[in-house]
Image 1 (tube, rainbow, N blue to C red):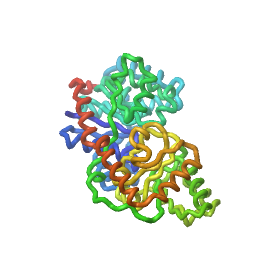
Image 2: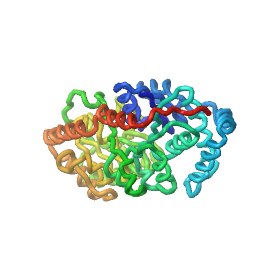
Image 3: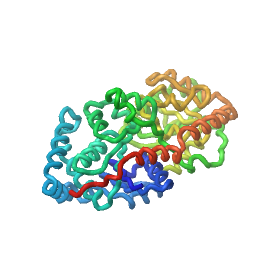
Image 4: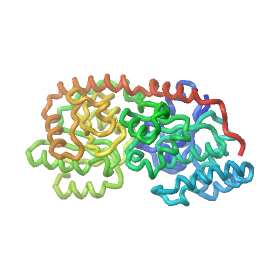
Length: 407
């Protein structure tokens, strides 16, 4: 089985689940070609990501002008298909959140992608995210390329499905992957009932690097860790507010914010305003090994997200025998059972967040260890990378053997 993966930016620190998925597919015998728009010059710290950079072809490595030969070839060799793809690109640009010239860029990217697919034929193309990556593979298909599918993660696709023309992208696809039951329900909203079977449920998976690690006892230190991009949807500002409430109540606390992002300056200002510097530490971007180290050094993961799909870091924490504190948002309650694997609280409720943190810090390490064991078993049952990759192999195998036609 020869398939292609197409991602907007790859590899990326926050997209390690895509790398795991690709490697799990290859372990099952699939040949996977990697294509991305950008990412060749990004600084990555994980050795596995460094290796993936060398295996990936990048559409914009030669700039926009580098796409021109592929555009001319498609327009001259298959003018009918090119006109149909151009019409589709302009249709998708109407009401979109990005201006129409960018959709012409996506068409040019699709022409280059198709050229590579002709040089290295595959039976199917899979994209991650229902944004511009799904549009590029849809346009490549319209130009004569192989059938495609894409995985929808959320929350962006759920926030603006009409601006992303999600229904049109699903209509042209062979199938669509949702990573949670909640995500599947959101996709069903934009499909006729007869097409609901097109949406398939495949969880993000974890590999043995997280499964088969020695059990590290929960530390007695009052330390919690939040792993994720420092951005609005992850709720770190609310977490700082909750930390202030606990500090003012006399609760010893060390809060680690593992990650970086556009909201870091604002978070640092709030930490300074409340005098929480002795209690809050921001790590900046760290690799997978450091993420594991931070999780194992904490009593639990805390993730007060406002919007999500199903965070992979929750799976990682549970695999490492750590309880989870998070919100009743999207697919999170499908994995984390309150009182069994951790604590859930309403999104945006700082008092409920502070109470969950207090309860976790008051819970004896032995009880947290028992919750961690239950969490480990839960995530092994639902999120094994090879089990989930087998589902994808079966779906890809249902595709026909059509490769990209000459262009």
